[in-house]
Image 1 (cartoon, rainbow over the protein chains, first blue to last red):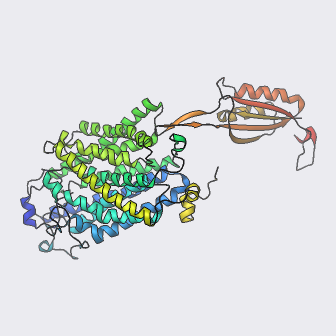
Image 2 (image 1 turned 180 degrees about the vertical axis):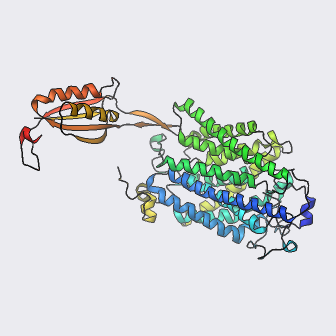
Image 3 (image 1 turned 135 degrees about the vertical axis):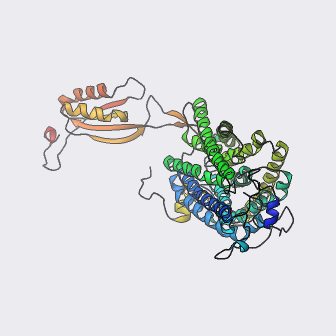
Amino acid sequence: MKLNPLLPATLLALLPVTAVAQEITPATVPTDVVFILNSVLFLVGGFLVFWMAAGFAMLEAGLVRSKNVTMQLTKNVTLFSLAAIFYYLIGYQLMYPGDNWSITGYLGAFGPAVLEAVGLTQDKADAYDYASTGSDFFFQLMFCAATASIVSGALAERIKLWPFLIFTIILTAIIYPVQASWKWGGGFLEAMGFFDFAGSTIVHSVGGWAALTGALILGPRLGKYKGGRVNPVPGSNLALATLGTFILWLGWFGFNGGSQLAMGTIGDVADISRIFANTNSAAAGGAVATLILTQLLFKKPDLTMILNGALAGLVSITAEPLTPSLGQATLIGAIGGVIVVFAVPLLDRLKIDDVVGAIPVHLFAGIWGTLIVPFTNPEASFGTQIAAILIVGAFVTITSAIVWMVLKTTLGIRVDEEAEINGLDIAELGMEAYPEFSKT
Amino acid sequence: MKLIIAAIKPFKLEEVREALTDIGVRGMMVSEIKGFGAQSGHTEIYRGAEYSVNFVPKVRLELVVSDEMADQVVDKIRDTAQTGKIGDGKIFTLDVSNAMRVRTGETGDDAL
């Protein structure tokens, strides 16, 4: 991610062209080639992060029961589309206000995103030494949508469609962009020296905090904790859940690699290569750690946890995918996997019902990944990392709680008992995902 | 005529079918069932939470044979389906008053 696309080019040149990509390139002379390559990086990265929406949809479709699959898919496609519209109308300018902060460092600008004119020339570019505004908007939008996708899985199988979508609008139009502007828009967290390369905190923990707040206010699924014990609710299709995980894993190369934000020098290209390799190692570390740990603890490996472990590895490396060695990246990801194996039963003991493990994966591993940045990047400090985690956590929890409570007292956020038992597909949509399957 | 009902482990079905056709059994009914006996279920772990599986999947065979074949069939099912481990199943033998082949109207042993 970057500081800000709308800063005048001269100003940008003065900044250590770090953006989030920390040190790297000495300020290069702007050329068409650099502009083109940077824009291509955003477009290809954006395609990959877009595809993560498919990953979330398949993961969630596989981990809910078959009677709720159509609803889960409906939420995934509509939340993505609403994110696209509201990030355009409100979110992008709030996140990247340039010089037009409403409150400098804290609250960005209000207004829709505007692209560069058709047939752009050098002198008309918003940031000739950076990339096209269209590529930047496209790339950033995908991160915003990913944040919203995280919430849907945790609250599956009992939340009403429309209140959920209204929450998605507030999250993508306001909550996500405001806190993201504090770092990536050049706000006060950036000034504090907070490091979050591609968003362990800014994307994943934010989705995780919103999901946790929602899960607490919404309550667990009927019967999940009946009789004072944990009653597992196995998912309907682990093949889809596995496909979804692989799609997310693929998309993550765009998520982290694209966040280098520059591809115009051999240094940048080599760094992007490091990021791809480290991202992959962290996912592998997370998967293997959960494989071994579930075998030892539960006597049999648990595929659903291994899938969560791979994703937790990915979330863990997202705050700093560039500076670790391959070994360090594997270790950082592996600890993310370990966190999942202990966090899933912990949430159950607290009676917080998270259907797909979104809170352990995105919130807990996101915090871990953000905390560990100073381990490989000497420019980061533990104090600042902790402060930023707490500030973002408090902001998202408080704003989400207000929105969830308002929705709960007005529209109501939970389906009634009969609808929940019969499944949201029939109750809310009148359409089943697998109409030809017999019910036993 | 005797009706033999056997609940066996599903993976033994094909072996039992072959053994029975080898000794001249010419038909059987098969259904997938769940149940419990001495084995009385078991526990599994999903995402760290233990849960009990109270009904274990079994296959139910139903076959009607002539009186003189009945003991041989029961022994054959036992020999083939036995693993020696808990959960091998049960075999019941009942008297049958009559049988009819729908196509021809034959009755008794002729219908089998």
